[in-house]
Image (cartoon, rainbow, N blue to C red):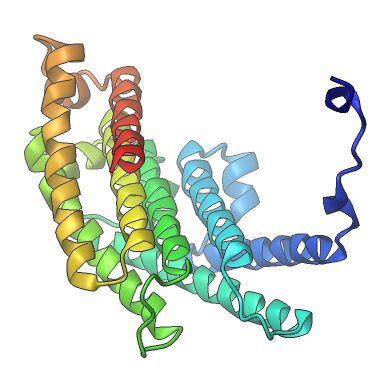
Length: 290
């Protein structure tokens, strides 16, 4: 019992490299903030402080959270044993900047591919579309989870080196996200584009939570397997499981209610939060049990 109450000085505070990486993270977050504002062509403080725009706040917060996931993934990624701390730091700088660039690409994919029927910038800045903003934030974090997984140590290393492997996994991940964005509305009986265009937050929350769950599963598949065919097969299986689980959740929790009507007609975002949470829980259980 004595050791239980003994004070043990946390040695982490004595590792000066940790403080260096913290400074690096702050710098990259600042660069990412500037990049987001430049790509979106927005005066951030004007929208957040003067106009009190909740949609931009959600999208921006999601982007910054995603950037934090990428930064932590870079720091935790395995490095060559013969690298000096200077080489390792420089390598981390390049990877965090590269991750920032990929997140900006994900922003453009949202604008022009996943939601081609309307302009995300206009919807978020002018219409304050919180439903679309939630989906954007979820897509940023989903992309970051996949980038982080691609930085994990390979199980069976292949000849193709970095950064090409990460770029390949990024492209495959975005393609699978696009496929999932087409399958989810059919399984959920939702008009995703129509609902989001009407600023429906409930639909955005439900879809965003489902996307996060799928990205978590997809990232875990990448961490466990290197083969692209295996990852694609698992992704398709996870899509089917998540769609099936949605019907089971509806049976046990929604009973006679129509979730589609609750989300689309009533805008019931409280119920949407419950569904999104249950979907993420299902993903967590799958990851733990498989």
